[in-house]
Amino acid sequence: MSAIRRARFITAAVGLLLFLVGCVRSSAPEDVAAEYGRAIYRYDAATIYRLASVADRRAKNEESVRAQVGAPTGFALDIIRHLALFIEATPGATRLSGSRATVSLKLRLPDANAPEIRALARDWDEPALDALSASERADVRRRLDELHQRRKLPVVEGKETFELVKEDGGWRLVLDWSGALPIRFRAAVADTIPLQVTLVPIEVRAKPGESFRVTVRAKNLSGHAITSRVGHRIEPLADARSLALLQCPLFLPARWQPGETKEFVSEYLLLKDVSDRVKSFSVRYQFANDRG
Image 1 (tube, rainbow, N blue to C red):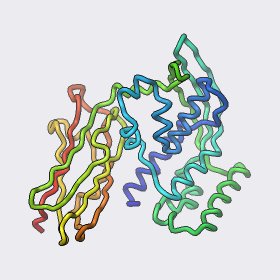
Image 2 (tube, helix red, strand yellow):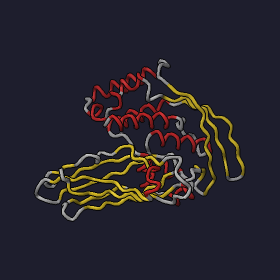
Image 3 (cartoon, rainbow, N blue to C red):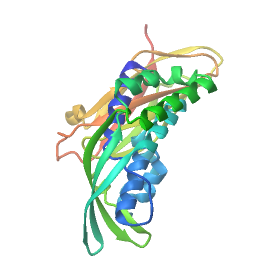
Image 4 (cartoon, rainbow, N blue to C red):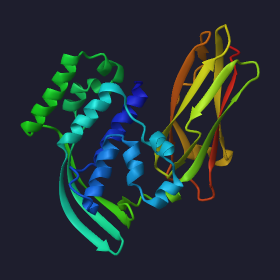
């Protein structure tokens, strides 16, 4: 994990902690909010999508949710999910009005950015974590358990409010995905470059202030090594600055061996000050010959 990506991951993890809650007991609105919060923490896009209201699911598909949620991989994700076991929540006020509910919860949550946890998590370095042996991984979990049992686990405290609507399938979260902007992605490859390029997802719907990831997968179809420079064109050009590119491994020329496939993950942030005149964005990855 690069330093930039690691910093973004840790920052996101701390922010996500403010949404976490305890165990689900039933289908009451408080419990649905709890399940949603836990899914956010666990990077569980399928559950997040399932718990969204019908209107929200019409506005954004599960693939877009998965891209926006992103996720660490391997043992880093295991640690995050282990930390989720230590969440404490105290129900606050619940206001019911017909098919609508507003749920407030007071939360006491593990602080994944605290030095004690970062040390155990190897500063959230995914390759370093994945290189740990089975016994070393068990030791990390054991030490987290000990911190929790001794009430020494670093925590953050806060309150969160959830809006829900009662639908045929039970209580669901009102997430206002209909207010999200569509952002579409495509690739343009020069005729002289034998690359097969795919993007996942090809469209994301994001609200101002939200970040998301796009994976570029490129395969060298030739029998010789090739090098390409990759540019980004964001339209409308006048508002391109409102779609910030936080991380992109394609800023430097990329090289492929014969038949080799590579994946590159770019991370974007739709700034909160995006103009009301913008109805959508289009992003084009332009693969061109490297002129050295």
